[in-house]
Amino acid sequence: MKKFFILSLFHFLIFSFSPLQAKLIKVLAIGNSFSQDAIEQYLYELARAQGDSLVIGNAYIGGCSIDRHYTNLVKDSALYAYRKVVGGVRSEQKKVTLKRIIRDEQWDIISLQQASQHSGVPASFQNLTKLRRLVESYTTNLHVEFVWHMTWAYAQDCQSKKFAAYDYKQRQMYSAIVSTMLGVMPAIGQPRIIPSGTAIQLVRHRLGDILCRDGMHLSYTLGRYTAACTWCEFLTGKIVDGNPYYPEGISEVEAQICQEEAHEAVFMQERGRFAVF
Image (cartoon, rainbow, N blue to C red; front, side, top):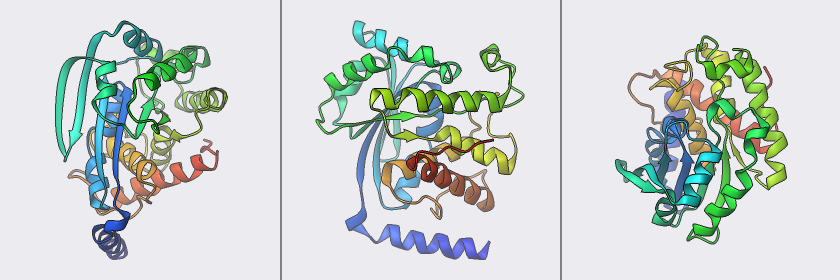
């Protein structure tokens, strides 16, 4: 514990007094409740602890799929809750169009994702290229980067009918998600992946299958913190292992494990590898 404290203090000093390394990154997730779990809490604080600042947007509709996002954008439907974190303060606007959200900021990074139950089903990705191109046509930053948010497999005890497509087996769902990404992403020129699903699986391997609160959505502490650590390292390019921030309800040892596995997930993904279980 003492060693981790010293390491954390070292990282804190480095991050806090290195203004030349500080980054301002504007990131938008076109997602659903799984992007809510990943970015609306803890992510801003993690980046701030290492000297960076984020503007975080989430175009939210619960359970929204690629097909539905595409249809909503084509029809310019005002169906979204626009959640935004600026300066650490979260706000929400309701009944907003996706076009308006895309144009609200000069986003540096825009993430896309599939509804969780379809994430391991290749046939459900047919409109992904169309969605990306349409989103890109409304962006105001010519250098915006599109990335893919890899969602996680359900808890092994999940009873939702959405789990039936994977025979109610966590490892089968995780493998299907990985296989689908490896098959689909290169074909549409989507090389960079935020590996939240891998990070969650790695932490499960060490702490047990305790990272979901309802079988599908992440727990308010360990689960969400692990996803936020993964996003933080991916977005900023700084190793999250040793970041001094962690919220109440998580011990220092647990925080270290979440950070270590988030880093491992990003490290593997950047080399084209995913954990096998």
